[in-house]
Image 1: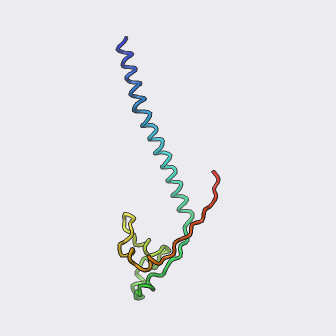
Image 2 (image 1 turned 120 degrees about the vertical axis):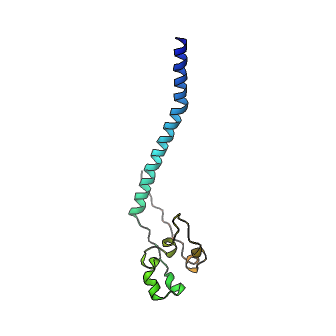
Length: 114
């Protein structure tokens, strides 16, 4: 009988020591994923209007090159269109006068109710 009680206490101790932190971690992951989905949906609903500099004019690109340029057809600035797959900016864009002299967007703070 004493051995059975010892195993019971050992099992309950392991359950408390392992299961509760794992469940708490899973709960935090669930909350953060829901929050991320909500933020992504918000970002898709409210596109940010950006003053787009015409880089092809600053750089002096010929008209046939402008027709094939994805940055000229996009509503985003050229350095956003030409981002690398990992999200980093292209090295050429960092030294470009269009990027350096671009206006900084002004952020507006909206009041929200929970």
